[in-house]
Length: 266
Image (cartoon, rainbow, N blue to C red; front, side, top):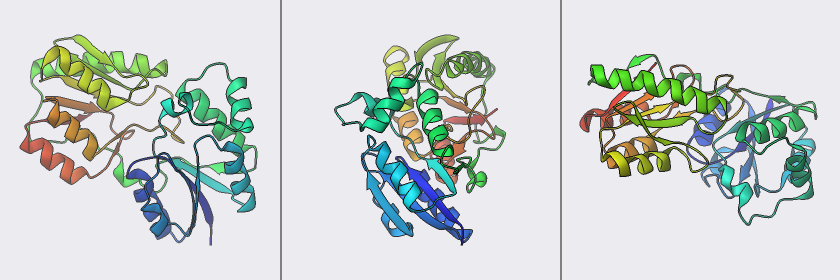
């Protein structure tokens, strides 16, 4: 039986991934970040360890102890946690100090590289859940207007540029005006901030990075996303086909149709 370590951040994605991995017959060792991960993982994992986001030496020790050969990082770990009052162990402090910058990709890439140095293969985050990647096309009953299509194309160009700089992966636009750019606060807060200026009917564009490392930080939408879109009266959500994980798709699309929200994957 193949043993796989699942390093879990927040949300439903680690739960979905763990269940899907177990269906392949794998033995799943979950290393759950206690500030982020869902307690439901305890009932799914074959074995589970709970550690703080700052305990990198402990994580490495678990991987060695369990003789892990394959690992997967799934679920968001909020970037801002590293700048909070959480204590970072010496191993993580040294790693962060060695980096050229503290961008998300730089940090996660360094962590992945350190794990790889142990002889562990870091799997693509979508390995067990390819069926959750967004298909191409207009996914809702309502289609974008000419003006909305122009905003989508405008937003895609801007979003790709900020994603390439590892600032964020989402922009909110209306009438070819950028209302907000996602940074450390996350997608939902960027949408709320934009609505302060436009009071509804904005176009939200969420993309992958130009050289997206599929081992981590894959764009994701789900129930939380649609709830924010409804609350902020967003008109259109545009995502990238094949590079965005779409959770609870049927329910999200039903809610989008009910609230006249357009979802399109380009």
